[in-house]
Length: 405
Length: 226
Image (cartoon, rainbow over all chains, first blue to last red; front, side):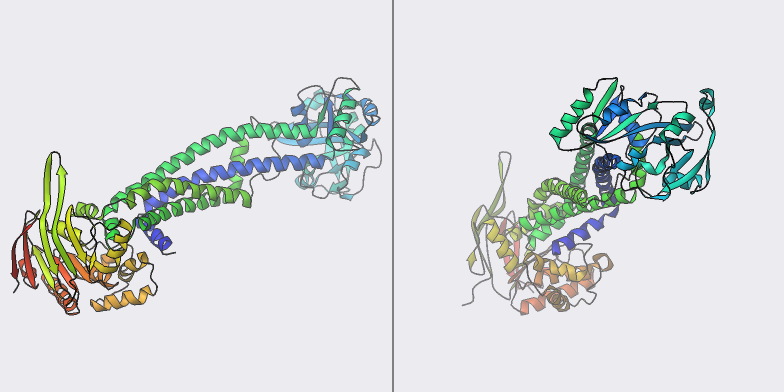
């Protein structure tokens, strides 16, 4: 305890130097914490999104399956379609419990990048969303001119059940002969904290009519009867055996692939962060070593009045560990308080690799990651402090004191 | 018969500089009794500080024996030497070497921290009172030279050593502070402490019981002071 107090006082002796070293470690730890949290958040978010889909298998038209998965997870425009009739084959496949055909389209305002994402669904979609709570009513029929709004889009458009949603096609839509329409808002979803909050749902046939895509769908979400791996494998194979120009895509595969991609990125970024931490360690070593050299006479005096080499070693080591631990805590503090800003930056920086990241907050507060970062900071202090502490403990009192005279 | 606090017998300290052997101490012998204050004088390089380091267990003689409080410390292992030094010897330096971020009383507590002793604050206050310093919570830079040396003396005394080694203790002090510090030394002598005082200052040396003059690591003169 006394050593801790002495260490604090010694560190405060040169405040600027201590602060700069602490900030150096803090920044490296903040980056590390953010990346680890980002990765955890990404996996957590993706998992949650996939779980919220309520399905285990995705059937999409041929094309990049990851792109298709991203569109399905987050909504968007993907001009690849399959025939609705194909859905009948899917639902009849052994091992399939439920299946929901979906048509998806979007209107994007190029000036504001404001998206309106439309999902054409059937009653089967509701079966995949047992937790849905609708303020209002379900669609009155399979071709009703009605919409159900996700809570975010309803707030944004300031619409409530009973209001009219005015669908006005953009220039491209009009050029393609798509229709404007006034649709009744029959329901608004209670907040799901998923991608559904931003979607505009309408009956499948209504969307097909308004967007001039008769008989087309973009994806079929499939819920299997049994979700153990061998059963899923069999169901997937059975769907593949149906033939057609389709991709049969188990969502666990998507999760694994995304995790692998994230892992590769993480390894690369971690390598950079570790280099930053190593530089930080060199900075700490330099700072403490400099302090030891400056305090040679003082260390000599301490030995003369009864400090053993072990006492001096412990004193200097405590200072280093304390400095690094404080830097680590500072870094975690930065990361947690600036989580939104850091997340915004990372989302932008990683946009090229991950076309769509989960909507949920990716950087949060995880005790495990905090402990890991603090542990790493302390380990950094233990390593960086060893040499200066050893040098200090080996000081010969006479030579040290004589050096000042 | 009282056991001498220090018995140094034929102490040599030699260094190798290239092919040349330098004898910083060349057969120095000295006995200090309890309650005796010995002044060591001599020019720079005469071996005064080297001798102080030998008897202070900060260095090991090349040859000869040093017996402190009846214990032969020559060849004692480093760990035991540290403990012996901590328990029996007090050091006072010309440049005080107070820790600038610690208050006077905290500086005095330091030797007790290293000795893992309890009740430190009360004993540090007591030691400071003994040297007549009342500003116990002042930082070193808030004190004058004389008061800084009082803190250093209190630090040396706090663990009740038998032998006090002072290397130019008044070298950086004004006349008034010098007089006050010598008054403290006289008081300590009266309490039975053995004191070895290394100095260039003839008036300070004159205050001791015996003056030893060194030249080239040997005693060239020994006389009663005053």
